[in-house]
Length: 438
Image 1 (cartoon, one colour):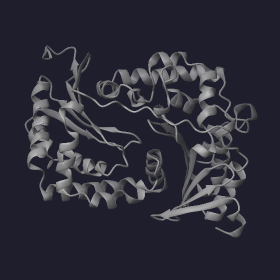
Image 2 (cartoon, rainbow, N blue to C red; image 1 turned 90 degrees about the horizontal axis):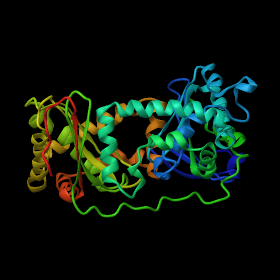
Image 3 (tube, one colour; image 1 turned 45 degrees about the vertical axis):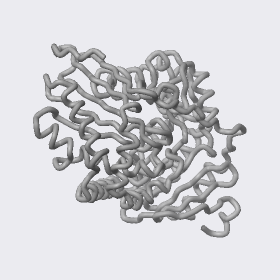
Image 4 (cartoon, rainbow, N blue to C red; image 1 turned 180 degrees about the horizontal axis):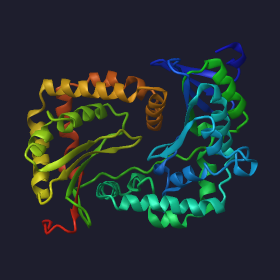
């Protein structure tokens, strides 16, 4: 960084070829990684706000705001003939946004000569988005349609209820899209209040990956984001903690569908906890590929058509979940017993060294594949930012490599316990199967 920028930026650190800067004036974090392999660049803004920052009455606000922030801002709108979508698509940009539990991101993948256009648009809608009621009403209908599509998907319904049952106090109880009545009834004023609470430079990280020059990027960010003021208030922290679970939880959902699904979840640590890496390895041992334990004991026997183990790292405590998509007419109790018996076997006898090494190799390969290209790198950084430490991205494989078979057995003993479990069955209504009574 040249001397011209020393007064505006503070260099924080470098990790894995990624440099972090802080814009002193307003607290905006900037992550930069040059890659001149192709003449494209990814520009992404990650806001540290997601559905975990919502509450009853305005669940789904972050997602609804995601839609509204494409409807126009002071400098980019249809009245001026330069709406956001048109401005970006006319220069060949891939543009979108996404919302999840811990974060929201807005991004552009575009030819590198048009980087400033993306920067200008994102800076403008950070604090000057219109958020008009005449836009909210039609977008509410779009979001409600998304909600209804999810309600018609057996897995989505089961997953949403797993989280809603496992978490009672913590806002992970609410799905990202929100509850229907909140989607339909939240006011534009309430959405604007939410926007004016969280959407500030000091609650955001700008990520630029690809074909650019550092000094040019820093100058452009300073020109467009520099005039924005930080929030005049402290960004609210989520202080609600989930109380200790004191016994297993169960539920059954009966809806139209083709085949039963079993979901078994256990409380897991937050994504930055050291045990999270061992649980990633364990998930591979249990459910990744034809050599996995569940494939051999469930799939090979024709009991299921698919297996999915889910242990995604989140800012707060998450879930280690086994989802088994059963063959029609297979008893959920039968497959549930196989899963729990395998957990107990690992807790008592552990896992094999060759299983651990195979799991690490699969994680390494999958990670390399997921980081191919500027957009993929920015997307993975986005999730690490959501955890509150972007270096999770650069240190992930190093920490996976340190996992041993003894640590895998220990985390199974610590987390895969009945008293912190939530079990859900999806039972298709056309089935004559009647679940056992608890």
